[in-house]
Length: 78
Image (cartoon, rainbow, N blue to C red; front, side, top):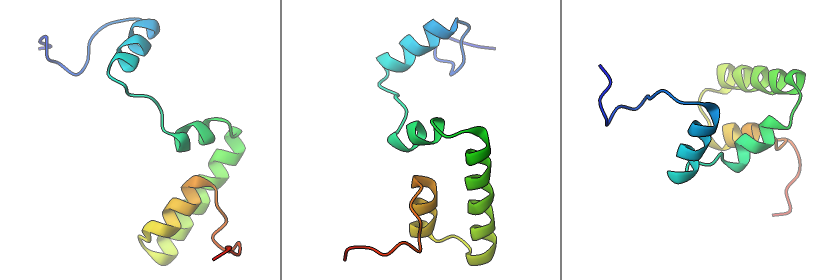
């Protein structure tokens, strides 16, 4: 049963977007970057991330680089 404090409520897409804005739940910069990628590019990045996790386990820095689209083998300035 859905009450007034329920997480889900009926509404249109416009209602949902207005609710999101009111609650200041905007997409992150990373989400916006991924949204601009083609389906093929998103799929390739997801597969690469999965393979890296299988090979190296959880490495927060590597995961962040892959999610942000940074080549972990690219030389850095510092």
